[in-house]
Image (cartoon, rainbow, N blue to C red; front, side, top):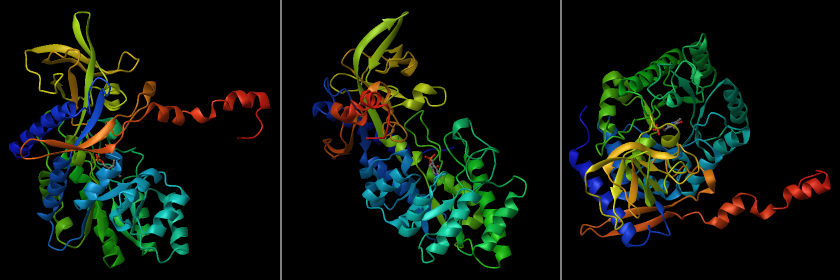
Length: 461
Ligand SMILES: *Cc1c(COP(=O)(O)O)cnc(C)c1O
């Protein structure tokens, strides 16, 4: 499969190197601030544009298309605002994510709610606001029945999520379309398809159909298979209804990301072509489209940079002890086989390190032996005061802090580079302060348990 224009990946790498150097020069990163997350604003905008262009190239003119960014991939308000300005809406899956989207100013009609465990209060709020909702299961549909009666004028487009059960990919925990996946109505289970069709025929207000089949480790052809199943179901519903009841297909997200190099592969354009070949009717203008990409929009535009606090040797192998570990790269540390990350070496001035490859471990700061970003990696030797950068970490990494050892959430900065090479930073999220860690850990109620023992445990204060 051919990838991105080689130039784009190279330009991204050049911008990244410039940002690391500038972060050190400008004191964003140093002995007292040993870890930061960096976001490449130009790269995010390029990916948003590439997504829009890929679908514009295959859809009939005038087809309504909503690209809804899966907020869980990078739940940071300024990122959602930037994407909103680039024409990308949001897919939310919790009250917290919805609140982030609203704080970013994303309007209800650009928002889709998809979580598998929505409470009655969440559903009501969504219908009051006019947010699109995809019901996950028959019990949720019953809740929608009651709400639609109570709020007949809701502007919310409503649909059902189906699991086409087309099979999984190489990462079991991320495979959404296996026979026993927890998501949506399992379409190939006995009686399920007929149940879904009846559900639509009985409810003229169900106008959307949703599936999210892809994820990291899933081939494009399998993703397209899932979409094809949903499309065929929509056609069946519409035929039996005798009208275009299902007017919009939500095809989910899940485009895999290449974590092995700076090349972007597969691209949105490739996926759109695969889809058009497999499901041509999807693009002929009869259906509006919703997409829900997360990882593929942000992953390549984020970098965690951490200072090498100590460089040591154990059993003959060099080990760089850095400030980036399980708290910012949880998946990689716990499942290194499924989630390997590239590590780039920079010297104490933030310049790319040269030198012969040395096989070494790159460790994190947490107090357990498995807290390793990379094991036996051949790269220029990391020494005390150098920096190690974990690449492609803009989605599901530093924005997903894991509070092991009460390690602070690092600051996150967006960077913009001028033509002359100068770099300016914008604070996306401040570094968590130690006082905040204490407050979140019950610091304001230090006596709670000892007092409760004295009172004999009656009541709550
Ligand atoms: C996680 C998720 C997405 C985004 O998946 P990516 O692999 O990040 O593109 C989209 N839709 C739903 C329903 C999801 O749960």
